[in-house]
Structure formats: structure tokens, C-alpha cells
Image (tube, helix red, strand yellow):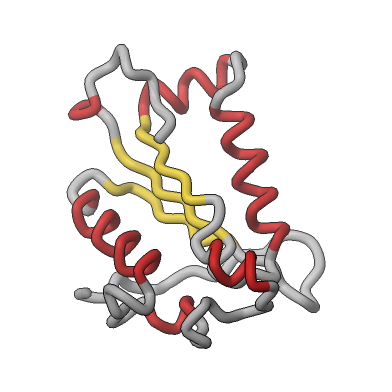
Length: 135
């Protein structure tokens, strides 16, 4: 969590950033690494972001899959990104915990960034949901 602790949290919105749900997408971890470095810097822009937001960063959502050398799956052999709707607390614990964190933060959550890499697309691109699902 990155924020200015001298300013009350109740005055701030929350931003959650997660990356590397797919182990082979190391560039997503590097994006979060760079974002965290910037947010912790002494620049005026970073100070404004710390003053106004609580930043919750998860740079590697699937560390077990990374350690095992998997490209898309976790230890249980499933793509954790496809388990978001109903994650199993034991088999998909990182997704389960992140989903609970998002739910707890919902009243103050202004943005959730789920960073990925792509094997064929070059540069930076974005996909966005049209509407929030009820769950």
C-alpha cells in the first residue's frame, strides 16, 4: 500500500493494481515495478497521487506459477484469470483474496487496473469492461 499516511484515508479514493496473473507476462510485473517506483518518488506528481489516493499494488498475482515456470497457469493447472467469477479459496487463493479486497474497497474504489502482457500485440493497448458485473 502506497499513500501519504499524514492525510486521513477516509478522505481518499482507492486504486488497486494487479499484474502477472499469467506467469509468462513478466512485462506486467515491470510495469507495476515502475509505477511503484514513481509513486514512491519525490516528484510533485507522485506527491499529489499519494495525497489523494490509496494505492494497493499486487505486482505478481501468480507467484507459484512463476516459480514453477508455467506460462499461463498456477499450481493447480488452471488459468487463474479465468477463475475470477468463482475462485476456490484453496485452489485459487490469490484471486480469491484479491476479489475480497476489491469487494471491501468497493465504496472508495475508483479504479482497478489488471495489467497483462501480450504475445503478439506491440506497444500499449487497453481493454475495458462496459459495465460492472454484480459479483
